[in-house]
Image (cartoon, rainbow, N blue to C red):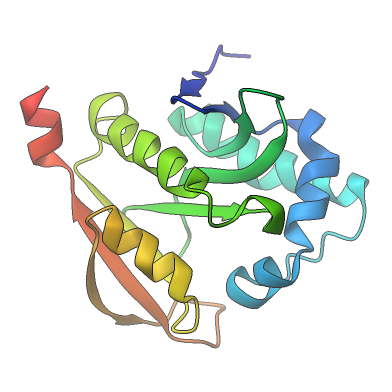
Length: 179
């Protein structure tokens, strides 16, 4: 097993999600906003969450060196949410995604975590462009993507999804070139 990078910000630690995060992932994937905006992943138990982590998150981490990160608050190591860079089927390029438990929303944590991963995408993973998708009704994600300087490109339909999604993009070449 490789030693994968843990990212740090002023208030947060972003650690690659592993099977030890199963109880947290089970809770997060069953929050009303996750189900409404991201979709029901049919994770009904901690065992389902461990299997989801093993089959969906760890293979990409081992293949590309990045994937889903569990976001911890430094002061008390509370697991608050996830943020990641995903090689999402049906989407060309890499996708930035994030989700937080309701208790941690609206406090700037998602912006802080996503900003750090956007920086890592450019400088550590040498990704020249990131994409992001969200539903038309997920206004808070749209606002966060605009704050991160993503630009809305078009509506897209991803295979296996019935709902059209908003596609955003951010060019990272200037960031990588300036370092």
